[in-house]
Amino acid sequence: MRPSAASATPQITRSLLFTFALPGILQGFMQAPGQSLLQGIYAKESGLALMALGSAVLFVRLFDVLSDFLIGYFSDRSAERGISRKWWMGTGTIVTVIALWSLFRPPPEVSITYYAGWFLLANIGWSLCEIPYRAWSLEFSPQPAERTRITVAIALATLIGTVMFYSVAPAGNAMGLLKTGELNMEMLGLTAVVVVLLLPPLNFFTLWRVPDGQSRATPGHKPPPESWRLLVGSVLGNVPLIRLVFVFSIASFMTGMSQGVTLLYMTNYLGLGTAVNYVMASALPISLLGLPAWGWLARRYPLQRTWAVGLGLCGIVYASLGLFPPQPNIVLFGLVHGLMLFLIMSTLISAPVILGDIIDYGKERYGVDRAGLYMSFWAQIIKTVGALSAGGGLMFLGWMGFDAAKTGAELTPRAISALKLVVAWIPAAGLVVTSLLLWFVPISAESRRLAAARSGAPVTSQD
Image 1 (cartoon, helix red, strand yellow):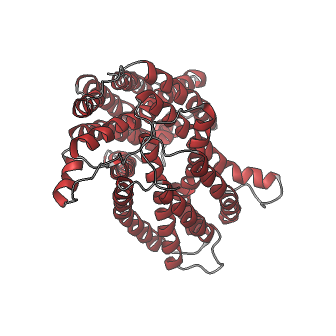
Image 2 (cartoon, helix red, strand yellow; image 1 turned 135 degrees about the vertical axis):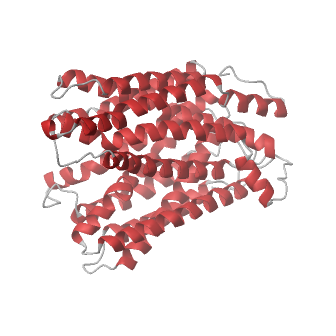
């Protein structure tokens, strides 16, 4: 983890790609409980008041905005001086292990201060690992095709990590390590052991074996003096970045709003019952197939247009979800739902690779490396849009009079229309509009063209 010198980008072999993706496994593993389950388990078993837990989560999320931007900013400033981003990841690994051990194995009598403090430290540790790691992954090679390979590998690793987390309870129960296969505090205790055993070896092995790649501190380069004007201008003045955030936010809001109420649609209106489990279980194999498939397409066709086609087709599939009657054919519905998930994968691959182009453009345009800052900005967009979309869909249903306790014939025509609007038709319209924006408004190609014009390098064939 010594300071990097300017050098040619190393060849990305399959073994190097595999090693590069290893930290993604534990990122998916750690964030699964932290983002969705931890609060519920503490509320159920620790005796902490819901109001206190909610306030603690809100405080941590607000602090998370500031800490993410600071980590992104200062990791960029250190990279400008030739200091590897690996030091940030190494520090984050140590912080995360300590925080998660305490958070997942609390004392019998736990206070809200204990929960809030360790949850805050765990979030800081995750950000210290994730933001420099994602920036490093986009900086590693200047070639869009190679960035796509890296993005696909990390996405697959993160998905595997999430599956691993949900396997801890049943596996622990089968081996006699847990009394039940439920998601509870006992399961979190076993999860802490897995984190301690796997996180440091996987992360530090990657830091040891994978070189820094494309140097961000070229010989003789002196970044301009930092100022608030330069800092704000390099983010808000980066036109391709703002365009990407705009179209990504629309697409993510539409899919997030639908997914937040899809379970109600399948159970309360369609009446799928236990068949919901089979439909949801199809997400894993479809995701494992969709990620490399979209990676293959993105390497062979114009990236932005490929994403536009994926979102346009996804909008059509979303519209078809609203046409199913109650008690539909399970196989047909499962196929449509699976196709929808497959098309959504286009966003997970295309958006980060385009962001890599924008990082290059930002460095050429403003003379400073903002990869970490852009990644922290990107992370906050994902978190904010995710929260707004999930809550917005539920609020719209409530405003339209939908009652989650009613099913089948008990649902009013107004409630059914509201449910179909949120699940199918509003997302369909939003995704089609987004696909048109992607088709006609230059983002990736423009940023690469402008960066090439300033550096004298040829524009790649991806344009």
